[in-house]
Length: 346
Image (spheres, rainbow, N blue to C red):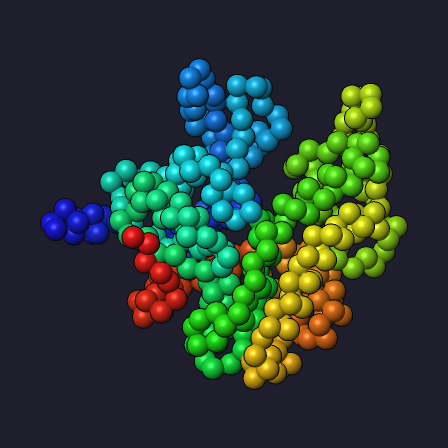
């Protein structure tokens, strides 16, 4: 008991948005203290041994650029932990970074999870956090965290609809009275968009792009609705026929075509959620509209496309990338809210 109290005094509580693409960390009383790619670089030895050599920004620079003995690994896939051991090391890294490398810190941690995860996937997150040094673990569903971060009145008996487009998943939820009334989680997000661009270039031009370059193409040229189909960008990849590096030019219209499938999945999920929302709450959307958060909300004209498809006002959060971790942090700062919107992980 004394030891537990000692650890409590030495700890500073954290909230973590453990994302497929990026991990963000909120330190109680300090705000957001880390925002780095969810990537870990590992040197592989004999007998299956793995040694961590870089995490976050430094590791992402190694994607596609390492010798055979070094692998840059994304421990999360489609919003859930795919590599338990590497996820644990990544969490340890971010916990230590938040607490300036102090080793005796055992914080309470809130971690956001997709609303559609299984019990096994929940357990993987909880066990990783405890093994990484957490004293207590709480889970919060991403749509609720994002809604709190934005400042939606989720405690009131009104309909609040949020669409959180992350790297691995898109969460679409209707929230009222601090709980999810209806939600859908699809494993389509920024990563699927990058993959769609890679596959399109292979299929149409026999050109192989790296993951990082495909992401850059999405950011610089991607759009849900194309206003200037002739807007161009020079891309570099490897010709699959000759094996030689090749440079060519693509248009915004082509990238829009490449993104049509993952964008279509997101639109259909929003429409399906609207169809399954109780009419009393759905009527609130005419006034309140739909809130967009997550990195995918920064895709150009995604709001225009959703407005066209639903006829409802679409609002993009001011800083959509940080809304989930900000919501987790606000729950951490409010004990009553913490009890209401989180699930203790034991």
